[in-house]
Image (tube, rainbow, N blue to C red; front, side, top):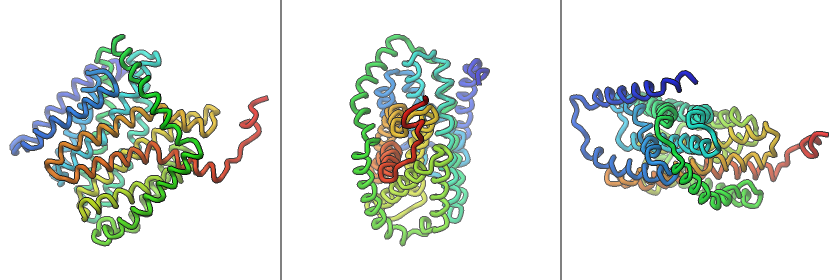
Length: 407
């Protein structure tokens, strides 16, 4: 890894040349989608503005919106012929945008804590590699598994896009960030921005207190119940989502991923319940907005679940790290939200905003923006709230060493 950072200019240059080459191959001999070119400009501009509000660094904000493109262009050669539409590509880009916001935010946070820029980028890559990879691979498995019967090639194409875009974000952001200037003015601006986010970040950490956790868990159960009734009619009209084996396998997959990351059964149950509530809510909103389920709609819902998975895995991994450092379970969750919350919230806000210009192609993009907000809430608020509720209702056994300390 250290060697790769020493040759980072060559890595970034090679990625740029490959992107140009794949872009040429993708459009060579084909008609350029003019509408997509026009709508991409305001969409990327919105993403850049939200990234700048988060990072307070112009070049890093531009880098964050460019980072998913090399992987997406490379995988697009396979995914677009398989049937992935513009709406699906925009949704995949939004998922990668959230990953990029978390990666860039982690770099800036480490720079503000006093690390050199190269060390901050390297450590951020090490910290974000697992959450981003796990979320992308989980999404790929869901795409392939659910769509294997009805649209096998499209499932593989969507899976390739998600994985390629996520890996592209990690590589381009990590190596590209070390090539941009990061002076004292940028550090001062980022510090002021962090100070302004502290009040609402403190409100966000209230989800780790039992009173608020119980209230939010009750709200999640109500939404899940409403979603179940609303999704029933949608499932009756769609053979794609009426697959009991796929439903059971997906629940098992989410639970095992959460348990593997957190190494805690309560956290795994909380993550599974949060994702079930989110899935039912997504189906409910989609049934109200469109009334039927298409392959593109399914891809968009899985991408929303991927965003929630990205935030949840990052939180669970950080919380486990603090627990291993002898922190209390509640304090570990709180500190994990402090580490991840700001970057993830900005990423979700940017993802929801950048899809809105595409409403000119299809009105369902408004629903998609709402679903991204719901996915962000499920990953950042739902999982710790439900986990805190479980701990409140079923007390953990604590050793004398945990209660009174050593000696």
